[in-house]
Image (cartoon, rainbow, N blue to C red):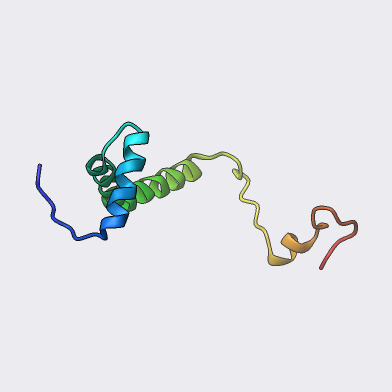
Length: 86
C-alpha cells in the first residue's frame, strides 16, 4: 500500500468521519473505494463496450440483412399519439 497525503477542509473531514462511522467504515476506506473505482472506470466501460459489440456480432436478429432508412424511423406514431409522422 502507498500513503497519500491530501489537504481538505476540516469541516468536510469531520462530516465525512461522522458519516463513515454511521456506515461502519472509515474515511480512508471510502477514499480507497472511490479511487479504485475512479481508476478502473474507463476499463470497465471499455470492457462493456467490447462485450456489447461481440454480442451484436454473434446476434442472429438480422440474419437477412435488412436495412433501415431514416424515413423508416419516422414511419410510426410516437408513444401516446395516434397517426404517423411528426
